[in-house]
Length: 292
Length: 303
Image (cartoon, rainbow over all chains, first blue to last red):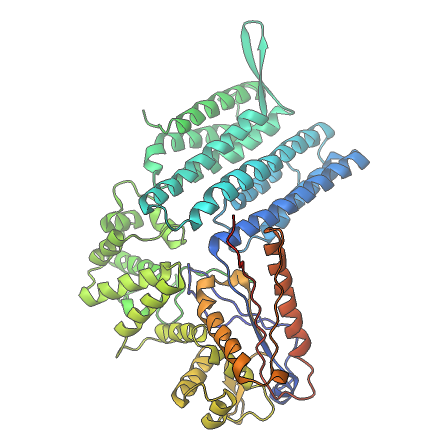
């Protein structure tokens, strides 16, 4: 039995929920003779709670990643491993009450989108496609664990949220900068892990790490996600051109993915263009310039 | 499971639903959440001018030309208001001096990050509400009292004892004469107001639920600090006032790895739940209220 009391927002919009547990009432007489209790925890310090959450979910993700690797070693079935990697993300998201402020939460949501785009949650992919999805998901797990949870949340945003003596304006500026850093890091993950440049004579050609179609699907998911990250910043006006570029890239990739070959004739062309665009966008974000 | 209600006022009668547009101008005194007030006020303005957007609203409040989407960030609790934007919204909504003062205190109260700040702004709001009636505020006051006065928790448990009587002298005596009659009357009203106590068919006080569990994740520590501080005072008094057989004080002092702190905290949490489940049920008789307080703190500075 669970009761939500009429106890609402006291701090930071956080509702207090009281849970009545275990014992069912059998009338008031029985109730008064059996006992009762009030368990009052010490509460959480926003940032401390988020740090604990981040560490907990990192550990859970590591566990799922290891399980997926072992399963793959034992069965050789990429689909089973991919299903486990997706389950890890779902499990971490299920534990994410009051953690939506973290970058890890954001990347988990995106991770699930990527998994769905790659058909990893359903299984039944042909081996080549399943292998590509497995590479991408493993790489995305590393991105979530090392770059997002460790660097951006635990060593970046969360300690910053709890610092009380820093100058307020400076804190606000850093807080806003986080959105841009996250957006750029996300694009760099694609550029650094999912594509490679191969020199062929005088020409440099972009090749996918795995399967071009899968990389295009990831770019489809993250181009719109990155635009949304930049939109969330108070400085979104500074990046309005970048946001627009990302949306146009997303439209082009979406059209191609749905079979429209007006812009790209084949995957190779779509991948080359995507890589070039993402590289250019990432550079503008690094230089903090957009409409120049 | 905890839920977040950044838009929720505690009084459903004052907050219109999406299906019923707000025709009357929202009154700041009816709100305990400034975000709900801002949202309802925007809705009210839009009933008169459907072209007035959230972007225009925040711009008028002083957020600058390029603040598209910013209203949603404020509503979702992802951004707070600064002193200048508080005044900007007050001006936009044509609040008078007293209303502006109340709005300002409410914003600071909602955004407070320390127990001291929260207490300061609550007292200001409380003072400002004298002579005004608001169901939402009554509930907020009861919430505040619950976590600010140790005896509310004690009285709720006392109701479960076998010989409980709604007699203020009896209650005061059971609380070792540390609580006045006036405080007891207010406490019972607050507990009823919060739904923690109710009345049976004979009109007798009864608990609404056997177990109440305020989890760590459901609230910020600033909410409960005052309660824990007062319980520590009771424990300290017990050392000198109570017979040895009726009290127990013990501690463990450890030299250990600082990373064990979180692990011990988790074990304490599990222990508290275990004690409540084991000794808060299936008793042959219930004739006392015990407080088991546990503290874990560093007694040396961290390097």
